[in-house]
Length: 361
Ligand SMILES: *Cc1c(COP(=O)(O)O)cnc(C)c1O
Image (cartoon, rainbow, N blue to C red; front, side, top):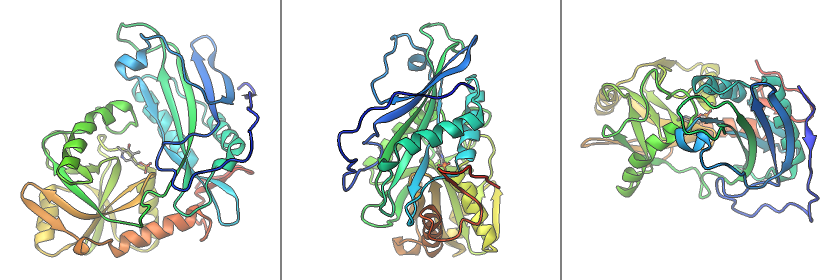
């Protein structure tokens, strides 16, 4: 692979991150960008100042959604080191998503190098406060200017960085979830297990309607029978039964969350009975009615752990822990964040330090 080119902007003064940066509103000074053409492959890797992209109005990504993305985080540990959480896992998923929508895959080691280089150059933008992080958004888009439907020939790969605030600025609060059988997010053998824009377009209306009714998000059911639970918003879901912590198995319509995987590892390490299987919404309702349901929580990079205070399915309203944060949810949140900020041992080797190559097991 070619050497990365650097076009670095002189910074006028120190980086100042505002007190509550919100989520995805603020961007750092530089991006990483690289191009693809069939004759040159991936080429022209450059770290350069953030500026608007310029596209032909016929660019394929704008019409047919040929795009995939990732979302991961860099943290500043308590001893002031910059670390990235499980980047290898995210890069592998980016390539898996790319394959499904005919985007040429990237060299994993090179992407890791680019990621570390960019974050390293922008490391003053990594917030130090607990709960805050530098959100990393790599994405791939097809940029041919042709209106015929086919895979693009030319592509761009870009990494964008955004300092983000605590997902729960007022503290860890439970969310209210509506189970929807009006809409489906994805179907098996479709795009559900790829991080691709189409899935998010499919989810907007259901989420908006739920929000208007006072819910935070929706819980999606499977696309065929609307019977099995799948995901909550853009998070994976876990059902905490009395004697089991179950999460929907990866049937093809569910995104394989990195946080989901981390939580499974942690729970197993704690000796819990964790399972990945089909879970019908009726099983959840029955368990609730029989007193066998302890709680429900979601997992994802943005919120880490989201405690579900209530779940509403048709006319059944299930309330967990009196609408307060569940004990297990809090413990998982605290454990994951303690790993992020280097406060407890990184026993699974999930942190990649900028200065040396992280090896994940
Ligand atoms: C990103 C995402 C998740 C969570 O994945 P993480 O790797 O844990 O961030 C879950 N579901 C959907 C649909 C997502 O887009």
